[in-house]
Length: 388
Ligand SMILES: Cc1ncc(COP(=O)(O)O)c(C=O)c1O
Image (tube, rainbow, N blue to C red; front, top):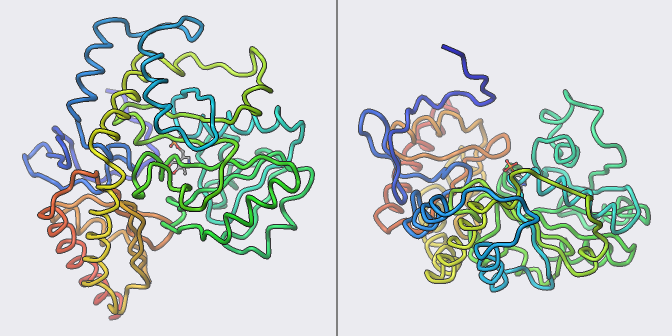
């Protein structure tokens, strides 16, 4: 038998099935899923609205080139127009967050005729060559250099670093409203507004990467709504397909009008299944007031974690926006993640020392209790061992 080329450490969990907010392993053990495949299953595993839409599309037609029109595309455009980020007029679908970042780089260069790109310390925009160039962590980036040249990193949440990196040769500035992989670190409103002002001053484009934050997770459809800025390009992924692998790129008219035929292409981008999934996911988002519910239950979970963890010697901070929550420790989080899994709660890491929780919006008060008890118990045990 072939061996699997794997880039991920084994979690020691053999998945048998999943439903809603739960996963079962091959021994029948049930887990509350606060990992959701890096946030993908935000609408719950096997959400019936999405499964039905995909089944229908599968038995109608599974593939069609992007040059053909189809009802499934028109219906999805109609649904998406109800949630599209403010000021955007066009959308296209791709297959992953990284691919959306790649296209944003190309569109920004096409629209401005400039080459420079800016991202920030702590950023994560993906692992393909262009996206990796904008990902700050040297551990991910350095072994694969040379990547794109003309990339600069400003200091995240430091207004003082803005003018020196965002200059008149810059095509686009990429920012996450809450840095996910970088450690669940929210951008401050003051900072994002200053970035947006500087971007328009120098005639560059603002690209907001909502691959992790978007589609309701932070308590708003788009996390950047709270800053009162409008982006030239907004990227979505993960939650937007309700579990189906798809990403989306929204642009303003001015960017769309600079695009020429042949500027981009993707065999699987915008396939009928992806449109059906996005359309169904948007229906769920609107029908169930998902952002509102994520905001409310996220506050309850964050408060409950704060209450049981704040003041503990190994805990630096508990923070969150909606259902994007981080417990920052003073030590590596791997023991806590392992311990939580053993006790039936799946969480993941962010940055060097943060336990990240990305549960689906359907978690119940009972799940909140289980997550809090398990994470607290594991953090307390690990803190005690760390403190010696
Ligand atoms: C903010 C952000 N951008 C881009 C990506 C890359 O997405 P993908 O892994 O789907 O390529 C991620 C993935 O975690 C992300 O969090």
